Image: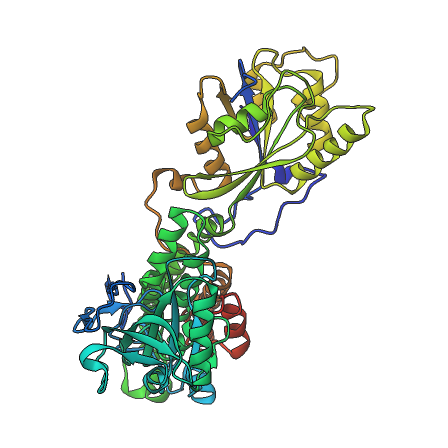
Length: 575
């Protein structure tokens, strides 16, 4: 198999990729092409302050058992529990920013100002489980009146029948009723009092039988009792506004919900547990320390010793290095969130569908001895090193008088043009042929040895093919299932994340966070230039404040309403 970066193609433009500072000073392109040389291909087949270290589990009880005295203590005395999904409590003793809570010296952060201006005292409610048929559905009620509102709907049984004074982190059995006292369902009520809940408000969850009918009836009763329907992402927004989560953690919640692989879920969970927040809080703390010293010298220059410029430069470089470490996770995070689209191309009957079946360990594609069996683009999903990959098996590319086959060929070319990585399959027995060269010229142009004229030998030597045409070469056998691990490794190498092959995924930054980190890094570069140019201290503080503000956008301390709207609009209702 041979590979070549497709970003050099004159006929195709790769998708926009995030650029960030690297040790080499450049960002590598993602789009690549990959040639597969087959033989005997068959035709068959670290936590922030205020964020806890552990995950508390909410206790459950049978909805069908008929017990009337269920009073299960669910980690009620655990002050450090984290509530993922809102089913457990949290001891929230800060705003999750590692101690840098006031943004800049002597000013209120935009987050604090936004909370004061937009604080919503409404009690909200929503179904937080899927609307499909299942065993249990959950209706969450959150707000200062969550308990009184739930009390109008929930009727406890047994010894709590006439005097229900709920305690935090306890489960109670009873029934849900409407305004006419008509029983709607048997339910469990899980009570989590402020601040030890997902939203840091009083929260009551009513667990009823699953299915859309039961859940909708209970939710309707809760809304009639005084709650209003929650907006998309409003529970997590309240968790952010109440200091339960920082903005990076809130975004990790969304990423955890949409994770398509185990590695993506692990990365999101690392962010939810405060990995990125702790790193950013430390960087902000270092910036703030430097700013305090500079501000002091502006006010009391005669009373303080001269600034240790070499030490200041070293501190600036250390902060920049920390930002660069965070930015290096952006490519991995982008891969885990977005995944890769890989197009398999080649001439008819060369083994493309056999490769797809072997790679996915399935019989997804029909394989026959008849050339041109595949007429349309066929999709298959798999995970490579934790990266979600969509394979596109395409029709064999050749000139044809068949109208249907010509349409399939055009779709093959379109799939190759849009893919992140192109896998070109070459028959291992025949080697590189003029037909392969025609396909190469049609996809990537004609300035390479492999795309040469018909005067070249029928079988191009593999070293020349690897050196002058593609980015890598992998030998595979679909019949023997050989070379697939090497194919996975080559794919991750081309994608710019070879470390994923060995596992150990940690938190990563998303595009919004990376953009803010880049601006912070640029501000620190300007600060270093100001120091080297011996400009007045006022210029130093301007650049340092800009770096602090940009770092604050990552954690959410320095963001406006439009950013919050953009972040939380991606959440589903109920989260």
